[in-house]
Amino acid sequence: MHQPALGLLRQPATILVGRGQRHALPQHLPSGTQRALIVTDARMAQEPAFECMMRQLKDSGIHCTTIADVQPELPVADILAAKEKLAGERVDVVVGIGGGTCMDFAKVIAILLTYGGKPQDYYGEFAVPGPTVPVIAVPTTAGTGSEATPVAVVSDLDREMKVGISSPHIVPVTAICDPELSDSAPPALTAAVGTDALSHAIESFTAIRRPATPLLASERVFVGKSLLTDQYALAATAAIGRSLKTAVKGDADPARLAVARDDMVFAAMAGGLALGTGGTAAAHALQYPVGAATHTPHGVGVGVLLPYVMEFNRPARVTEFAALARAMNVGNGQEDDEQLSHLFIDRIAALLTDIGIPSTLVGLGMPQGEERWLATQAMKATRLVENNPRTLDIDALETIAAAAFRGDRQLVHAATATR
Ligand SMILES: NC(=O)c1ccc[n+]([C@@H]2O[C@H](COP(=O)([O-])OP(=O)(O)OC[C@H]3O[C@@H](n4cnc5c(N)ncnc54)[C@H](O)[C@@H]3O)[C@@H](O)[C@H]2O)c1
Image (cartoon, rainbow, N blue to C red; front, side, top):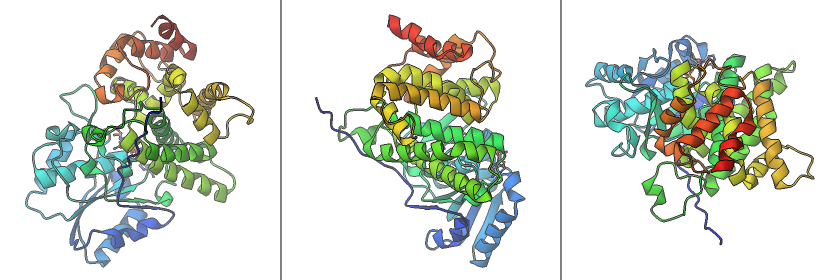
């Protein structure tokens, strides 16, 4: 029977993508802005590009306060401390300039400046009461897509794993995606964040499709597969297929390298639009405990797990994997969907190996024998588990983890055959 599809997209009001677009920042401040809070990290704060942006804001008559020491993993205590330092100060806009960590810091401090309290008060979905001080996101990595998403991910000493704040109210009002800011990313960082973008495209495109009830968009921040997010997931997949390898490995021709880097910045933003409404699934659920145990970058952990999760989900998503394969020009045009779906997983696994992502959890430094623990922890990421196209229980997650330890995708079928 025909199941009506939902189309939903939560997005910044303005998205600028292109070389040199960072210079447009002063023109895109909300009207009436006099005071801006700039959030960045120590690396970016030293960059001439950053100094130039600050000068342009000052020349436009904007008073800037800067937080320039955002730390990896984004500890909540840092955000709270920053809020306390800002007590009484007027902030008209928060500008996050950096990787996902800086952009997520900007989102959370905007919540605290608007509604008070501490980050913990807003964990989970729909806990932010309304619009916040506007956030402008300027990414310097081509990966997380945070510039376009309704989520911020923080770490909390009281919790084993990182935790999300998800609300339509924290989508940045403006995203300025300038590839010149990510040109400096070294190969390992480019590979990790590019893999993150790839996983956003694949997991949102193959996510669960929920009945399109009129309440769905208000009941969930991440609604699963949707007509509108699908378009961005396909576009991101195509761009990553063309360009991730070149962006990581470089090219003797600077023009070709620039095209690849431009493609990856677009793919990250498009992947963010897809993930921000569609949501991600099992690879992200399993990465949370893997990241906590190994302290490896989010994108690398997701990349290790992705082919195993795809293999598990493939029987339920043959048409979708075939569509993604076509977007990446996989195959010779003669294959049917079933064949293409297999070829696509092979292609993703090969691409990830090519750019240096380990192919097993052992290669990532995960201690052997932790399959059950990983599965138990991953089950706690309810919104991700529920977003998977095939039902996940603890045994299924354990089987996927076991396959990822042993480096054998076919092992995922051992459990599925008996279920
Ligand atoms: N909000 C979302 O939608 C979302 C989605 C995925 C991931 N995340 C979160 O984003 C964070 C990861 O963000 P990230 O992967 O962008 O990394 P990051 O922001 O943590 O940065 C990683 C390192 O790269 C450096 N760096 C950044 N840009 C650089 C550049 N152009 N050249 C050289 N070095 C550069 C940083 O200084 C830092 O040392 C994690 O906390 C993750 O949970 C958020």
